[in-house]
Length: 209
Length: 179
Image 1 (cartoon, one colour):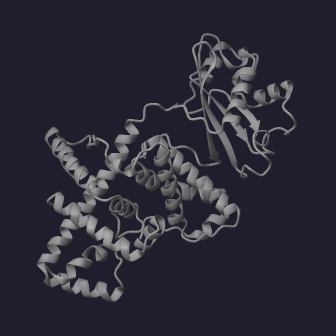
Image 2: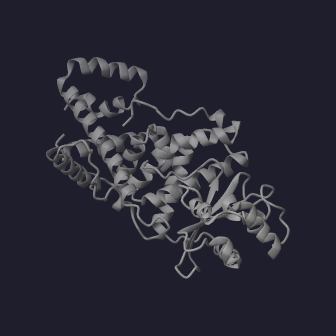
Image 3: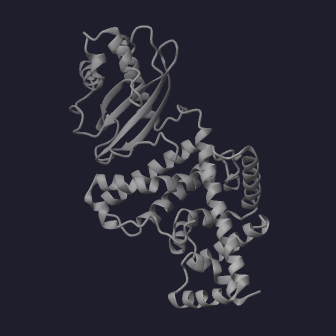
């Protein structure tokens, strides 16, 4: 076996010091065995890359349970469910239509309304502020209301909750909010809830990576 | 790979320029991180969550005045550790990495070519599963564009060890796959 064969892959990865790399390049011009090995290593690296790409493509396609139940923080989740259940039913369910999920968003302190204790009227006010216009507008026609539910990638209903009502002051970094995917059972009750922390601008990829 | 290219060169000073720059960083690194995590054995959904968590950790790290050196390696290390924690929590192991049935073939491929491609992937998959966990992790990180030094930092091993491990792993694959 050629003395240089042990450094071929390091050379391929540009990990050899400049002097050794130059020496290797000179050697490759005269050693057909190393050139052949080098080609084989390049091919196997290319196939490994393709394998990884195929693995993630397959994993993405198999991803069926998008709303899998993952509760992050029992206290926060319980608070969100309680808030959802406390909502007047007419505000969250358009006639003869059961939305598959509700997005609940908790904004950092200062972004949402004041952080005073949550009282019923205030909560209703915040929900109204974050509910799509066509839903919160009492004069919206049923068609307008239904169309609002078919907007792609938009949350069905947003509920704004100041982060400092769920977490101690300073516990949530600035720019962070929470999105909760809430699945509604046929009887209108909350079935599943998944709370996901997100940074502003860091949106979850919905396309195949 | 991309050992001979460094597509993820990241000027670290950009991070201090604000959230929009951090978003750019996220866009650059999201796919390599996802690919690494899925190939480690996480589901696509879990991998997405780990990537999000890693960036949240980065946000806190930078907000608290943490070091901005080698952010790419730092992010891979955080994601790698979180993946390990999840796999321990669910009592799974990295041995299942790359275990998935690969059914991704090019839409343009003829049926014969698709069969050949699938067989090739199956053979490569078998060879990958015969690698040690360390060899697999080194190869995956290398395929993500990390230098040997960065791989060593992610896995907590010496750079020379990374070089030896990568060399050994590629030679094993070449031998098993008759390339």
